[in-house]
Length: 215
Image (cartoon, rainbow, N blue to C red; front, side, top):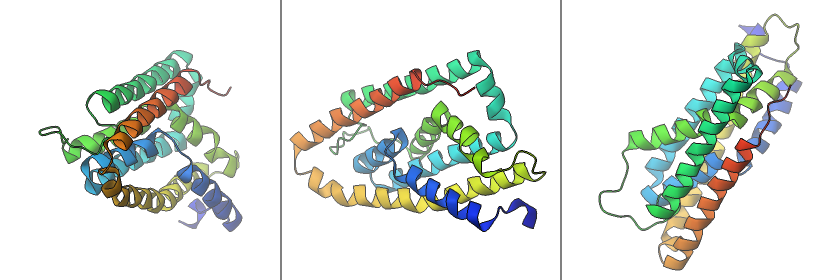
């Protein structure tokens, strides 16, 4: 059991990197805030849960080398990039047309199910090749290539990332929920934020399309 635990210096260094990544704005963070402001903190938490499930999947793929295989196949990686970009474009359009970006005003019959929020969070990470790139390029930097327990240690670091990032994104959800009351008082602010988040999603989509796998 002890073989899967990296040295303390590695654990601490990876913890610092995980904190930086968790607080860095990205499409998943935009989605967490969006769902929370629109539909309440329960939907925000379910979106977080879905996104973290996606992180767990990428961790296992990286640990067992499947992600590397995908990134080594240009056609497969391009398909993944296009899927991720199209998904973010869809979120951008939804932010403008149906108020699922950051509009606080709720339309009757438009509140999604908790399962929908979970799947949306799952999709935004599974369809994002940059998440795969992170786990394929960042995680291995903390593991020796000739370490016989490399796969187990990669899984440990993936779990560490979840343990560190979940409280941070939960705090973000709670902060967004607290701000909802203020945002509801200003339709103009709602509209500005709606278009802003649409731009964020579209911007990340463009970034993904131009992303290149490291050789």
